[in-house]
Image (tube, rainbow, N blue to C red; front, side):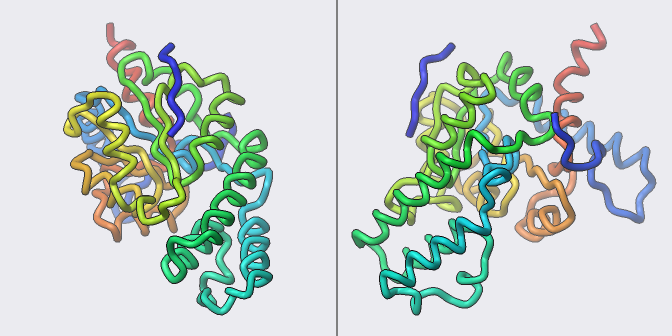
Length: 265
């Protein structure tokens, strides 16, 4: 956990994802109202890092990090514990978790987690900001308290946030520890953040882009907003049980909802 004192690039069309067999105007209006109902009571926001805030490995490719991690495991003589899917994945966390499930509580897992943290720290200054994330964070932080709850290293999250000049927006950051069983979908880090902020889960909101984010939020009793910048991400969220009106493919819609009351004054 990293605790702090209080104090646009385009990655998709700035429209809400809607089903293709519905008219454009009515679903957008309905989903905007649904988002307004979801967001209005929120006083605490729990953010995933990689996805809603940035593309962490955009400048230090995740697929290369995953490949290097597999090779490191092979050199330690434990490559046979990985499935073919884990060996071929572009997500280094999948590799680490796969080995951790079959070889838990070992010095090797500690070493590999530290190695991955160093890779994330290297990636953080090169990370690509998610469209509209920075203005949304600055706008929303005026009315809600923030925490980062990520399966990445909290140190890497802090480094990225520093590069964007957003440190004062995030008093608390919780990330991966050596106990891999506590990574999302386990709600542990969400509960840590809620306790630190003295937050009522019903007045909080988790912003994430993966089913693991949704599952952790559900188990912690926290409402959820899904960010899905492509159809694959959207399908994964919908299959996990996230309602379509609680998904967006651009953070601009959330920003517009937050700014709308001010515009009407």
